[in-house]
Image (cartoon, rainbow, N blue to C red):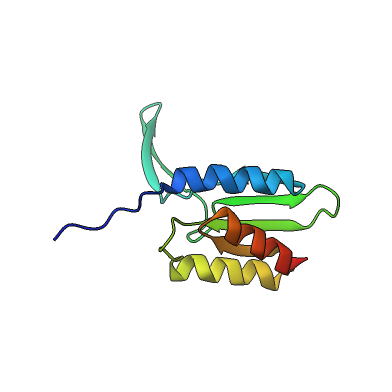
Length: 115
C-alpha cells in the first residue's frame, strides 16, 4: 500500500514559521535532534549525543520580554510524538511559550493565545 504524501514539505513550513517568529520579535534557532552516533576521531571511537529526545525544532526568546519559546513544526495532518508533547508540556510548566504548529496560521493563533 502506498502512503499518501503531503504536498507541503516540513522544511517549507519551518521556513515560513521561522520568518513569522522573527517578524513577531523572537530570536529563534533551529535544533537538530539526533540520537547517539559513534564516530572515530584520532583512532578512538567516541559516542556523540544529540539533543534530548522530543526537543522542539525551534527554540529562542522574545527580544523585548526575554521569554523563552519552543516550537515543534509538523506538516499539515501530522501531530507530535508523545516525546515531543512531553517536551512541550515540560517547557510550558517552566513558563516558556511552547506549542506545535503545522502552518503559519496555527503558529499565529498559538502566539495570540500565549499573549
